[in-house]
Image 1 (cartoon, helix red, strand yellow):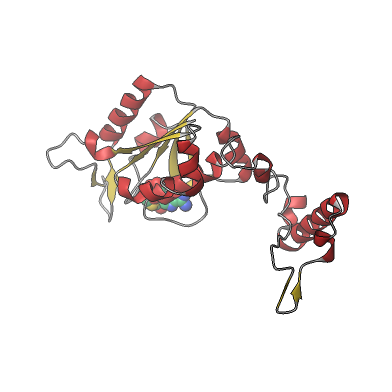
Image 2 (image 1 turned 90 degrees about the vertical axis):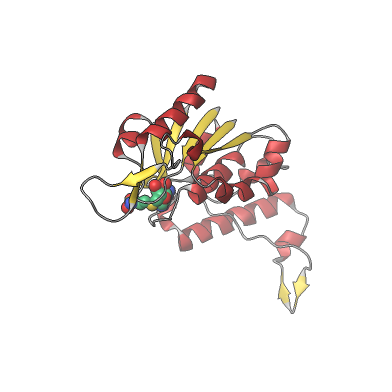
Length: 224
Ligand code: SAH
């Protein structure tokens, strides 16, 4: 998979990709991530990519021309499955959207800032809009990192144990069961006996029951 991230603040997005699973996925050659500084595409002499809103009001708006030029440049090199604008009013990110995106080959994630992008970018240049939740961030960079992380860890070969993504919460509309590690007893707090029994079928049954119970308690709507 190849991900291009368009941003005016490239530094903001570097660190999530230079550590842990996202780093390993790139090192293994499974994913390439390219962060593009939109300012390179600024056409005015001050190299700005935003301007005042028509009609007035507080907050700057990101101009269409640098974004259009940037996307055109990228499209000349690759065919994209989706050009995604990170937006608080976009489609809310879920595990099932992450699964869907993990099957794509080339993606662009466009990060907004200030008041967001000129509406014509949304109408004519992007193919999809994704939100990471009903709250407003100051920029799309953290949201793009969230999307990339949720998607990349699902690509086969990225996690060292391929089955582990399958047993995570939401993957089968259930919340993950509780997990424990050594010591088996700490300050008198014990690990459930079944997990120490070595009995694979019983452990599997217990985990499934726990998953169901947790889902009923915490997220009953997932069971509908
Ligand atoms: N004025 C806009 C908010 C702009 S926030 C509104 O009220 O809808 C600035 C940028 O941050 C947006 O362009 C978007 O790229 C990003 N952003 C903010 N909240 C986000 C969220 N919940 N999910 C994804 N991107 C978000």
